Image 1: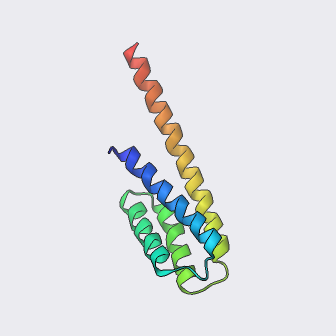
Image 2: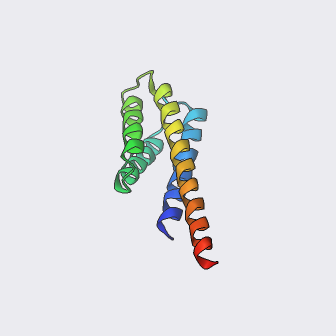
Image 3: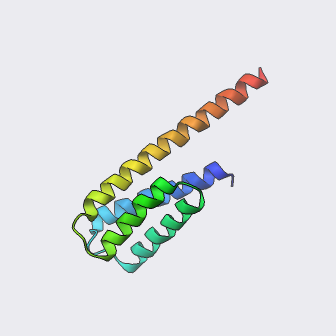
Length: 104
């Protein structure tokens, strides 16, 4: 699995977690959801996406402390993930175009 596929897989994991948290509720999040969020926070830190990691860390802290602003933090994290995914897609498309130009 190349690095782009790895990052794409991680993005899909976090999007699924966000969906589960939205449906199941943030203030009643189960331990497995919190552990997954912590793992994803660490993964985004590892790959150098510190802006995403910061959003996930704030969300994690808000959930653990039963803070009511956790819903707002979830929406901000979702927006950051969507933007990050779009940027990755644009970079990937640009790379493919550049590679195809060199083949011609």
